[in-house]
Length: 251
Image 1 (cartoon, rainbow, N blue to C red):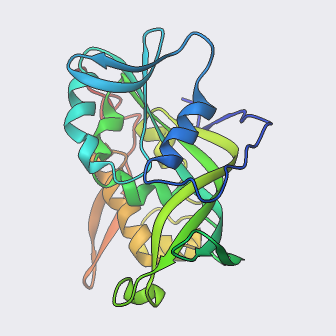
Image 2 (image 1 turned 135 degrees about the vertical axis):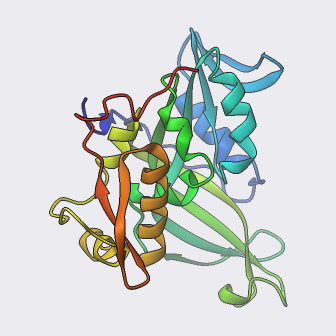
């Protein structure tokens, strides 16, 4: 079982034109970046519209929550190979616009994204990675986030509302094809027994993300609880040599 697979990204980064953005811009740009010669676009398969059909592989691109796709993915993976492509911003440039679309300011977000951020989305569908016909591909990107001012909204951003995102470049892609691949995102050096505070410190992530990581990996069968320390659950890796079928089932 290999760990997370790195896939070469396109060397050609395209910068979209500011001012032509809509809610589906990032999705459309990713679909255009991802498509290959011979792909069929926006095809109906088993009653669902699929972004890309590549031979016997169905490719679905999702730029938001995975929850709306749960039923679609569960049904499609009963008969088809499905790859879910999700963009994660490594770098974000925040662009503030006037109501007329004029650029007021630009700045780079101080927060740098990372592959572990996928667990924030995966909480909606963690057990799908147990299906042999399903895989997840993370597109690690540079993005531009466009904001406009709306008084009384977006309190934490002082009234600046995100109106869309657009793709600057795809730096690389990471493919997660099994629960074991997902577990490879755990940091090295974790003790045999650990709680989410220890995981957060070892991975240098927020406690909430560490909680999402352990929730997903337990749902996949590669982590299990081993008691409590006070109010905190203690986790450990499942010995897959003793449970060889724990991470897969046949649909």
